[in-house]
Image 1 (cartoon, rainbow, N blue to C red):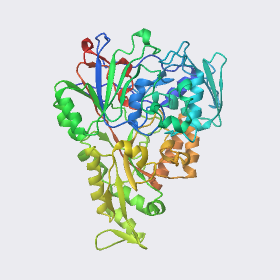
Image 2: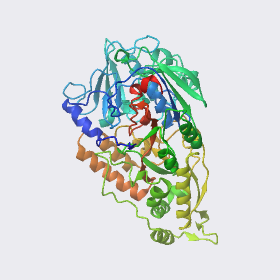
Image 3: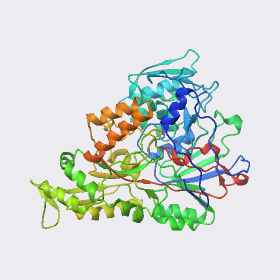
Image 4: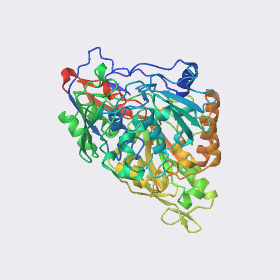
Length: 563
């Protein structure tokens, strides 16, 4: 992320590049890079982080809020972790699985993860392969509100070694991104000896949901006050404790919906950091004299509109979806709403993904004249109020996004005006982010919904468009377009089943062609999400993936132990 006054030096990330290394036995190793300071880290200090919305679960892979992962990264030690460059590193595994060491089969259907010996949960109980085995089974349980089952639903069986230091997964089909779904704390091993006391549905409703009593990460829960704060303190049983990690004594995560409150806290210096800032306030952030802005130039995320196919007009009239895509002034969204903190993108693969990103993708051009002509040709006539109708159907839709984000409200106003010019009326109805992701989107209360999608270390976009990722009554899945296309599933299977870069890119290109003709989603741009931290805060290096801001929080430290 761009950090003022200097920039992080980043490299382009590709999981397939990593996978090629893994298959050859040359995977990345080491710990996340620091912020560039040569100062020696010191222990101690309380770091206060304003997070922009309320988590709806602190059990890995439960709930649907991006902000769950920020706190989960403090509480749960993952098998693998990512860094600021998007690289995958060994976490509690003893080595990266490779074909050379026999841990990945040539057909990508058998994967073995080997654990470091002596791992413990915060209560002192052993952390072993039984906890991984429990986790994937819970994620596949229809009674548990799993955010995504992608990859986990391919596991046919798993063998735990006699010493419980290894687990071997047998998949029903090849799955190249298998390591990525276990990377960072959004899908970490779970404490079987605690969680198995509950039925899956009861677990999600228990106190463990927002106050896990037994954890494995660098910190453990001290105070859980939903809506107010979550305080985590150093975990003495953390597997890297003998390295002096984490450096901090304590982190206080404070959910704040009001961007004005975050700015006020920054201006008074009462917080150490915040992330996913309101870009409309960039001049005010830049005026702060004791904070550094941090914007990662590795872009893999994308702002999108999910088009609800359960709305008969939207789902059954491709020309309406196409006309909307042609009528949106994408350049104005970036310049006016984002104040330049975004780059053009029309596909669900940012430039940081190779394979994935397609430079010559057939993006829709801003052409309201052609959009009007398309609707005219298909019999949609403008009425006296300027809104088009056909056979009693009216092109009037509800447009929704998260409250408290002025740039998204500006997006809405621009898009509302754009679509009015082609005879489509948008009625804006926004809801808080925790409600938006927890119930509003999964229950299909939207017609058009804008939000940001952040991949997890692989370009596979199954969560957004696959048929089996359509949310059900019991939850699960992020396909909020409720769109099912067997041809899309076919190409998704191809890209997930190969370690060959060219094969995957060809499949992604085919997927892009479908998205840009059928329009189940409209990708608006690739945002650069700013973070900010005090000058006295070190190793604050937000990454480009799901855990984002807190990707390396065990390495955060403060000058003289004072934040």
